[in-house]
Image (cartoon, one colour):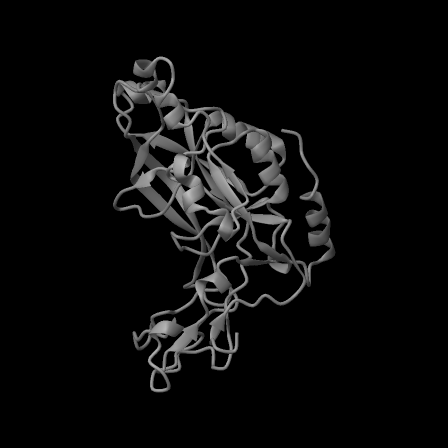
Length: 318
């Protein structure tokens, strides 16, 4: 890593059997293409039956009338839930306070929505942040399971008098509220400050917020090695994505939740689930989702955190 100024610190006692990155594919049929096993995605749970299987059913005419729920976010209110203790301008957790979606299925389709269905709606302006829709039965079973860190916000259906909306069960936005405990990227061989004007920190070591564009001088502070201009280029060099792709969670900052929030207010950030939450989702055949192991550092954990860690390694009945 000596060739790079910004990198992911993989030091410490790391385990890869405790927490998993959690992703909902927009298209279940090609989930394994977007989440290849070569990138570490070990679990790919597709919808069953798939749309292709529906299309190839014996009664093709009837099969074509059935489809999985498709929706788009049309109205949303987001709230800032947590801020960085070192710099309150850094939002470390946000969520939907309210959400409205419009059903996109055609009027002659029968919407398939199973008990443990996970739906990721497309977003439209002004909302550019992902949501995760689940039916009421899913919400109730999660609450009964003993899994922690989940919050559910009721979803409004646009034009509730429409024929499709009348047949839908109550929907909820499934939010991960366990405290973010991602390890920040580190800076080496340079000061943790803008290389042009010295504004600091470049990367907040409390919450991981990074200033790729300096808020003071508005210059680009880092770039990849292939685009770096050499000794005359003051930008710092960031390590390859492959070195930073699998995140590290800090056990000493973990609040004991099974459903852990991702990285701040970043719409591209993913969330994390404990191994027992993953096992539960697999047991109830929740679909569709993809999961891959992440690194969890157990150094510096308190006795209470160690006790909570032991608890989340126990299987729970579905």
